[in-house]
Length: 165
Ligand code: SF4
View 1 (cartoon, rainbow, N blue to C red):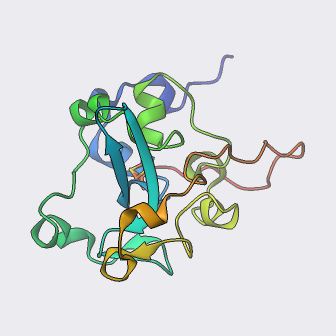
View 2 (view 1 turned 180 degrees about the horizontal axis):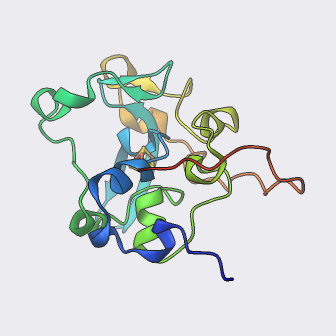
């Protein structure tokens, strides 16, 4: 009997329920970094400068429920917004699903391990500087944000996929 497709392959972002939608985020924190856009040149560089609310040690927002109040221009993702946000990191789960692609092998919905994104160095944990300390953004341009992730190990990790429901 053919195996049922996981929800992120079977549904569009629009069709997902709240739990499924929330579970997609891999917690990389890369969308909390500042970008430098040159409209004339059509370029967009990423920096390691993070929003003041990002906790650099954990790579997580330090006040997620109140982030909009404290940082009014914090973007709350919706399917419509994802479609327009071409600056989202290449590995962002919302971007991947929007483009009809599968999640990477290391995603917690596949492995059940929410720490793996950090262990593999695919998140901002320990690599960002707060905007409160950074100084000019031009001094902080980095190339690791969209670097290719590690290849899938030959041996399947002995982990259980997360159930978002
Ligand atoms: S870039 Fe995407 S997957 Fe990473 S924290 Fe932001 S919303 Fe979540």
